[in-house]
Image (cartoon, rainbow, N blue to C red; front, side):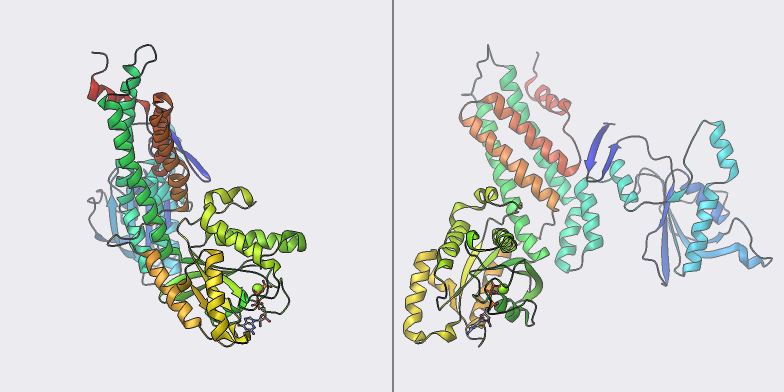
Length: 533
Ligand SMILES: Nc1nc2c(ncn2[C@@H]2O[C@H](COP(=O)(O)OP(=O)(O)OP(=O)(O)O)[C@@H](O)[C@H]2O)c(=O)[nH]1
Ligand SMILES: [Mg+2]
């Protein structure tokens, strides 16, 4: 078995070591009064504990539900009933074919608090009988006693014993946390091993390409690499194909995210434009403070709501104006406003139809053009906070306060066409509204729903529930490595290109918690090319 360390935030442990020496137990169902409670045990003493609990000389048959009477180790009263703990359904899963890969026992008992406490007390007592300790000492075994499990310890043991990879571990977490049907569907695909199989197949392809590259390097003569042959062309073609599948996957994750966590909708605009008023209108309640004083909203105001059946996280932000004319707090608010719009899936630029202060004009225009054109990557340097940008962004304009216009019928078309040109936004994405009178808001909402449909369209695919950890590794490590591979390959730079494939494979290893051993790469080389013959 391969032995190596794996890092999960907060936990460092080794995989592939012999199974744990301690036996853990826990109430696996929620505490409180209930018809049933399930107590789960995992570890080397599980089976012995079950036999003692049931006063049974024989081990239980594997994976078979049996109705058994559970007995207490000590009798508290003279009544014979006091030695009976409960009549329970018991299950025994012998190692290694169990959830944790160790011997696992499940006790389905009646769900009263006293029953559960009594059974758990008995589990602990039966697992730590003096004769066990004597036997343990004689055999030199220094096993830790039976103890209550730490949070997530059953699943951690499953991972340590190769019963799951990290994507499946995260999928189990997702199943437990799932509140919506979409979240459940996404979590089951991860927990069921779909992500593991997909990432392992990428890993296998990268090993194959790595093998091709290693062969080119091995066959080189005096530092001259043959980049005209089929080995090199195959590597490039395979990497390009893999890169586009990975990018498609990443894109699907992003769309899934919209269904799972909600569309990120940000309001952006000059001070006093009516951003907070629009937020309150959309939320149908006074969630944000509205006032005539410019600079009322200083920090991000975030609310969750539903628009057209979509979960939406709506963010109100501080009005944009030149940093030189605002105080420190407002300047910080403006940085956060820019970050929120950089991260948003949909940005509504709220612009007053009646100009109040021409100074906003340039600042807002610059920011919207920035969002559209410079691309989110380049925006990173400008912000002290680290945005996780959404590359596919819809920007629409809410032209507010139309009720204040003297002659809207004449002025509006002129203004709409002017803003469309200046902000490079199609006229059908500019919505004249009035937050105080409510005019035009319905049309704006309809358009929002239409854009959500477009953003979240997964075709016939099920949503993919990838953790932020996985998303970041794919976006920041796997994709850039493969892109760099293609750049190096274009320059015939075989050694650097080969390194990038290794980085990508290593990054995928971090997703699943599996590492790529050098022997795996060599195995590909030897099997395919018979190097050394
Ligand atoms: N006449 C009119 N007044 C409006 C409309 N929408 C908002 N207002 C008023 O404009 C003022 C500013 O509104 P807010 O919603 O606080 O503006 P904001 O964009 O959030 O402003 P900051 O938080 O300072 O950036 C308030 O007095 C609102 O009542 C509208 O459609 N018509
Ligand atoms: Mg405001």
